[in-house]
Image (cartoon, rainbow, N blue to C red; front, side, top):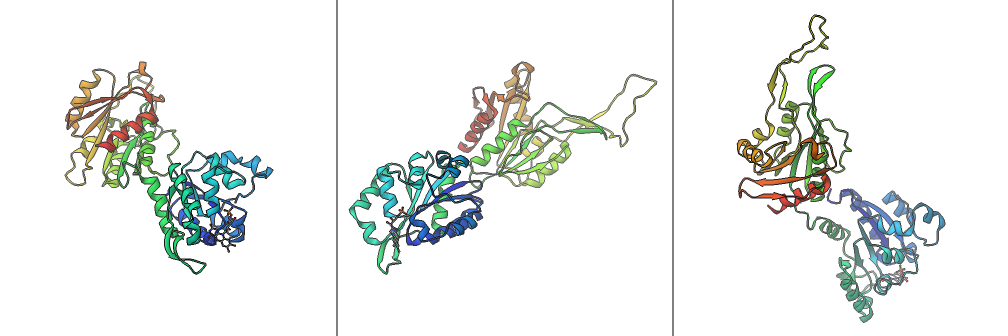
Length: 400
Ligand SMILES: Cc1cc2nc3c(=O)[nH]c(=O)nc-3n(C[C@H](O)[C@H](O)[C@H](O)COP(=O)(O)O)c2cc1C
C-alpha cells in the first residue's frame, strides 16, 4: 500500500487520453490513496464526471463559481487539502496557462493557489509537443519546481508517431510512489514499537499500573510510519488515539507484551518505549480479595516480570539489528542509563528525567538524551513536544 492515506487531487484536462485517468484512479485507490478529481470544461468532452465520481467515490469539482461547492469546500481549501496535485492528462493549453499564471477556471485557479507539490503528465500531438511555445512553457514549469512524468514516444491517437504520448497509468503511479518515498529514511524497514504502561492484575478488579500515557511511543509510531516504515505498535492500555497506517496490537500485561514482541519479529528496528511493570503479583487471586475484618494490613508478594528489552537484545535468532531501550530515571540520569545500556545489551538508550518537577510523565513534552553503545556518544535533544522528539529520534535512527 505504497500510497497509504495519500490524498491526490487529480486535475483532468481535455485531451484524448483523458480516459486513462480512470485507470489511474483505480490504481491509486488500490495502492491505499484517495482521489478527488477536478475536470476542465473540455475534459467533459472526453470522460463523464459520473465515471470519475463512481471510480473515485468522491464528488467531482468543475466550476469555480459554484456557490454550493464554495460553501462546502472553498477553492482555496480544495487546493490545499491534498498531498499532491496531479494533472493528467495535461493538455498543451493547461501547461501554457500554468506557465503564465493564468487562473480563468477552477483547475487553473487551484493550480495557482496551491502550496502542494504538483506533478504533470503531458499528453498531446507530437507537433504540439515540439512547438517552441510548449517547450518554453515546459522549461518555465520545470524552473518553477513542477514535476513531470512523460510524455513518452509512441503511436498517437491522431495516427502520428513521436513524443507527446501520455505515460502509462502504471508509470504515473510509480512516479507518485517515488515522490512519496523519496527521503523516507526507513522505507521498507519493519519497526516494532512498544508503548504505554502494562497492567498487572492482582485480582479480577485490581491491577498494578503506572502513569505512562503512551504518548511518546505513539508519536514514535507515527514518525516511523511517516519515514516510510512498516510499523507494529504493541501497546498497553492508554487513552491515545490509535495512529492510522500502523499495525496495533493491544496487550495488558508484561507477559502478553513479550509474547506480542516475539510474534512480531523479525524486525529491523525495535524501540521499547513502554513502561513495563517490573513486577507482577506472585499469586493472582481469581476471586476479588476481600477486606479482612481482623487486620488492617495486606501483604502482596511480587515476582519479577520478564525483561523484554534484555530478552530481545540477547536473542540469538531474530535479534533486530537495532534495539533501542528507554530509560525513565529520576536521579543520576545519565549514569543510570549508561549502566542500563550495558546491562540490557541494547544498541541505543533514550533516557529522560521523569521526576515530577519535569512534568514529562503523562505530559505533552519530553527532553531526552540518546546514548549510543557503539560509539559511546551522547546526543542531547532540546525539550520539545513528544511528536517533535519522536521525529528527531527517528531521524537519528535513519542516519545510523
Ligand atoms: C478530439 C480532440 C482531441 C484532443 N486531444 C488533445 C490532446 O491530447 N492534448 C492536447 O493538448 N489537446 C488536445 N485537444 C485540444 C484541447 O481539447 C483544447 O486545446 C482545449 O482547449 C483544452 O482545454 P483544457 O486544457 O482546459 O482542458 C484535443 C481536441 C480534440 C477536439
